[in-house]
Length: 238
Length: 103
Image (tube, rainbow over all chains, first blue to last red; front, side):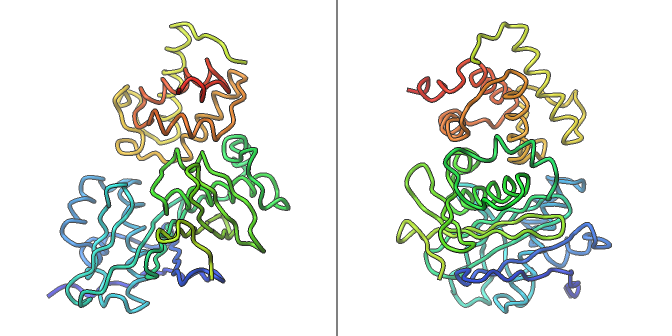
């Protein structure tokens, strides 16, 4: 008999106008242990992957991000148990979710994962054709030094934020958009963030594709979520 | 200002990158070589690259638009320590001309 999954303290974050995307945040440094989750949350293939990463920082971050996503899917009723889904990778390195037979052939949601410092974050959406990306970074004074490499001359958003927060916000938006598009670090660097309306931003990739994103500053972290609609080559929040 | 790096300076850049990665990622220096993959083997992330870029832009007083660096990375992926060192040589030596050098 499988052990009963332990529930972790994963918080849902609410983004208004967020394309039906569920975003969850997990302060995994505050969890007494993540070890139980290896048997209750991971499939056999995922366990083998974790073994390859080891039990140090990398393995813990990897595991925390998967706990965060799977708990969010369970709480939304997409799956009954964390082991009813598996997080693999597509050919561009984006996470790809597979659902077990209990999902009765429903297409799996598109998902994204990130970790930074003591936090893991996950995002998923089941809107057809919409790809989601997410990024979280610790909020720190080091962003003031990274500013010249994170903010480009074409960026035109969040002008009222302090320089270090602005750099973190713009970079997380670029990273989230690059994850949605599958363009990696090069794509994040070669993109521009522009204010669309209110707190909604448009992220323009070098190849002309446009995604849309929102950022959120919390106690000790900055995170952003971005969406790209592969059917229309851009994705508007609605 | 763009300049030509001597072999000695290139060695210094390479060693600086190794030391930086060792300090920031808590990995023993002797496990980091030219073929070491920064993300897959060391657990680095995009922020490590941002900080490395910033470090060398400041050290060599080079001004390069980040989008130009993105275009360069598109053509020359920087997965390993050796590839990253070569990218830094190009950024320092070519400055804003880095994109023209791609053609």
